[in-house]
Image 1 (cartoon, rainbow, N blue to C red):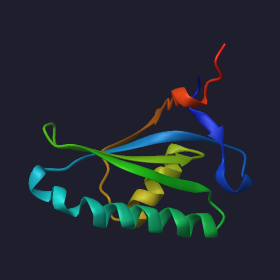
Image 2: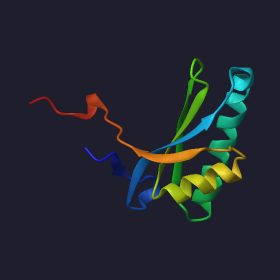
Image 3: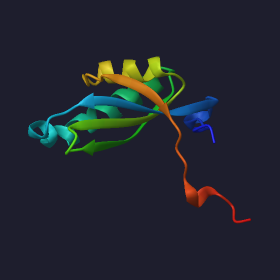
Image 4: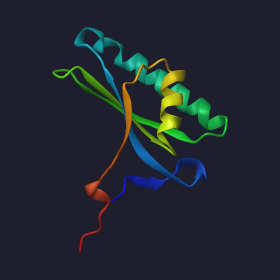
Length: 106
């Protein structure tokens, strides 16, 4: 499975990406605010004609790593959304998103 899914808003294929950043547990209280900024940035980019969806944030407190999960056409689009949301990501990687409930029973 490639991780690709039909794009929101009818703009073709999009992939799932993880934007990774270091986040000390002392800053974990800012997660909601940062998630709101990520969503606002992606909504504005979509209005402007660049389709991208913010899906969720995953915080690994013990490892002090935060992942922002997006659907987008390229990693560069995710980097731009992160820049607009003032999220200093360390890297962006394509991920495979498998939803077991979407498989038909054989």
